Image (cartoon, rainbow, N blue to C red; front, side, top):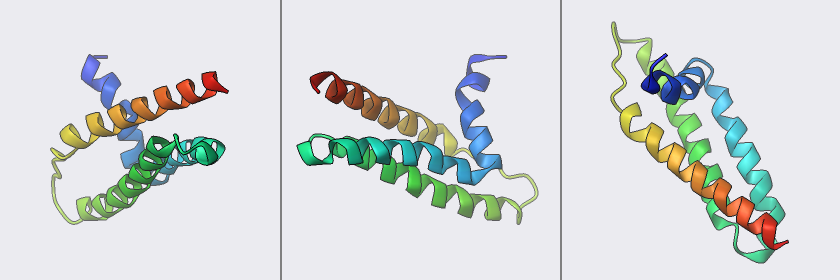
Amino acid sequence: MGLLAVVFAPIQLIMDHTYLALVPAAVLAVGYARYRSTGRGRVLLVAALTWVGYAAYETRMYFWSKTVTAPIRVDLLLITPLLYALTLWAAARWVALARRG
């Protein structure tokens, strides 16, 4: 299995089952709810809302792909790294907030 196959495997799973994009959104929303009172967990909220937006977008793309013969999803070459980077940033922020108490 190549590097690209490993990187894009979670997105492929989400493309097949679009509701799974709500799992990271829910986890990040829980993190935001935990640190909402400190005012420092906004990146968790942004990441959660981005995943919800991606779930809606992916649902639309799923129905679009049924109307064409061979859909080529070049958009994922941009969306996937951005989602991963934002999620990693939010996870790092969550860890930093957890260490502070």
